[in-house]
Length: 114
Image (tube, rainbow, N blue to C red; front, side, top):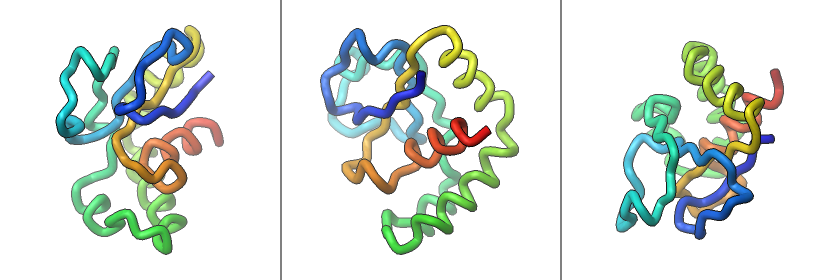
């Protein structure tokens, strides 16, 4: 099972294996408080794509398409997340406030579509 959760929310046992999928460490949060088991910064969108998207909801569909193109070239890292899901619950942890338009959600959708 693959779940999503903001890194600023308290961790719980229901989260299972927590994977931070942000390129930059979340501001104002210690590693202990984040409760992250693995930080996969390379799975995050490229800096150019992140700048282009700029959290503009009107660009969401195009952002997903471009990000999925990037993800298709990161097969080993995507496969690592899939393996964690097979072992039990895994939670993609992200920092953005917008829970409906962020790279963690796009990553989850990418993994679930295959």
